[in-house]
Amino acid sequence: MDPAALTPAIDGGWLGGFDPLAAAARVKCPALLVVGDPACGGMLPPADADPLAAALADCTRVDLRGVGHLPHTQDPVGTLKLLHAFLDSI
Image (spheres, rainbow, N blue to C red):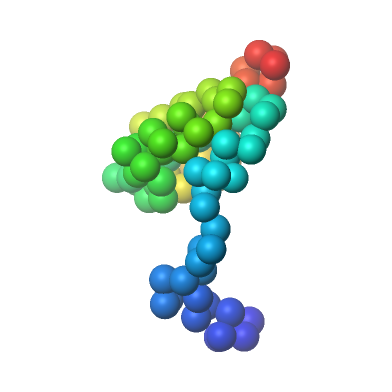
C-alpha cells in the first residue's frame, strides 16, 4: 500500500467536504444502524449515533454490548440473527 493513502486519515481530512447527516437525510429506504460498544472498539460513540439515527427517515438502531467495530467477526451468530430480524421486518 502506498503510505500516502493514509495521509488524509492521519491529517484528519479524510472526510473533508462530506456531511454524513446530509447524506443520511437522503436515504429513504429502511436502514439498520449497528452501534458497537466503544469499550470493545466500537468506532461510533452512542452519542454520535443519535443525530445519525434521527437523520435517517426509517432507522432501526441497535446498540451492541460487548461487541466492537467488527460484529460479524466478534459475534457472527448474533450478527446473523440481528440481520435476519431486520430483513424480516422490511
